[in-house]
Length: 123
Figure 1 (cartoon, rainbow, N blue to C red):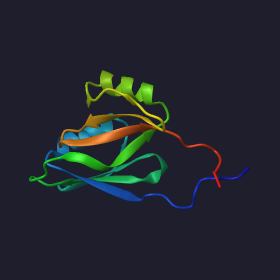
Figure 2 (figure 1 turned 90 degrees about the vertical axis):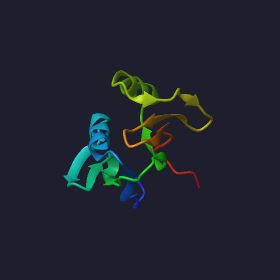
Figure 3 (figure 1 turned 180 degrees about the horizontal axis):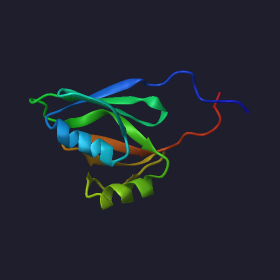
């Protein structure tokens, strides 16, 4: 069958945080893999090799992240995040995605979407 994944993906995305330690602990807690850290930034790896760069900015006020997470099982992820005591919204059942938001310690709201990835392309 061969690999049908596209040849291009997002390499890096970033968030500013006024609480680098708390944001780092949050990303580790939800399962991202830390790959680099210093006093000003931390880099975490997601599935597929995408990196989220957390940047310390004392003046950062948080808000909606300009990216979202996608997961295989939205219900299991929601249950996991809830059991970890994370600040999550209710699950919104949509036409394409089911989703919820999670608030990380730096004040950033990150949308978590159910997957809609399939093994074929629509042409």
